[in-house]
Length: 199
View 1 (cartoon, rainbow, N blue to C red):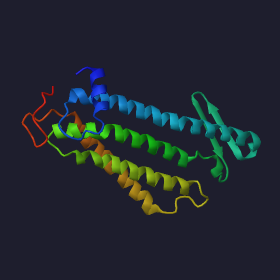
View 2: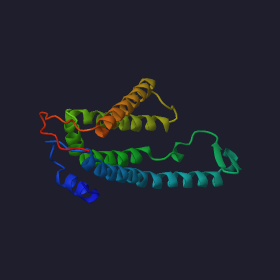
View 3: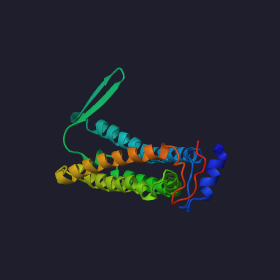
View 4: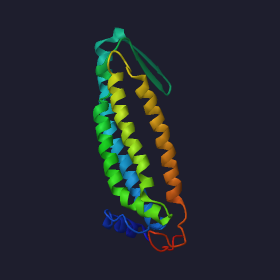
């Protein structure tokens, strides 16, 4: 299947969770969606990061006695005395934007991932684990970033450890899913349909 045909087929079947789908029709589409998701995350983060740099530069100019700036070849570091949560990036905005990007990405890939897993003889439900764990991770990060910006710092170490464990599970489930999506088609007929001639 050509690149254009892969994109067209998957867009036309966004709500079709039945049947099987070969690797050659899945990966071009998945690659485009993931590249656009990465671009979306970058577009969401870059303005806030640049705004943070501007706030820090302004703070340094207005409070030189509280800031130590080290500049050397290929290196720039700033150390500011005291607690200044107003200088942190707006993590709520970043997490919200990332959540929107993730939700759109999941919506665009859900049916294709399900059909690809069917082609491997597996239930499409296996594709849900990384998405669920990623949303949990974003929610935990939003909570922890709010605590980090307060004067008390992280007030719930158990939540931090839960977030760490969640991230480990997320990466493990994502690797498992990618291995399955990259595998060869099951050549025998399955409950999801006949073999599709995957390469």
